[in-house]
Image (cartoon, rainbow over all chains, first blue to last red):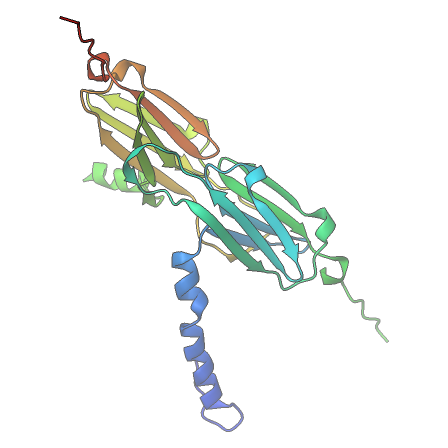
Length: 137
Length: 122
């Protein structure tokens, strides 16, 4: 990081921004405690979301797309019996993913394979990058 | 030395001990292990005397021409081993893999099953 002390740059604000980024809640709280873990990728036309949820049927997962965010909800049930060891998480879970681009809500696809949930969300036409042609004079 | 280097290269993937539930029921023991991303072919179960070792590799779909925005999990290796007591009928252990969860069923040996004792009227 380059610190320029000339008046052109607003140094105190840059410093604040730097420290704010260090302490972003997403770096601390989300990674450790959020369940289930998700991976998010995108290309020019689609957003891909993968989430680890072993032992859950696709029917037991509730996926809702509201204005600007995707909510994944579900319930992990556990067996009855005499437990010697219990490490697998059980109970209700929810995860909210913010989508910063307009999406095509009617064409969202979701499937489950080997305990991985895959959600593919196509971006809306207006969010796709367009090439602007420049005419030479 | 050369052996050691080779071994390190073979285990490049991060290793995890999968979350496990062990439940005793009337018919035997049930072990559930969370192994998301593991297909049946990538799973190895070895039983040697009293040691049961489970290892698997998880691979996640890779996308071409897509950029990763946020990552919380990735390719990894699951390894875990258990010691099995004499109570278990070792010949009849069953394993099923479904939806990323491995279920091992370890039936109790006949001699360990609870038995009802008849009382004779005297």
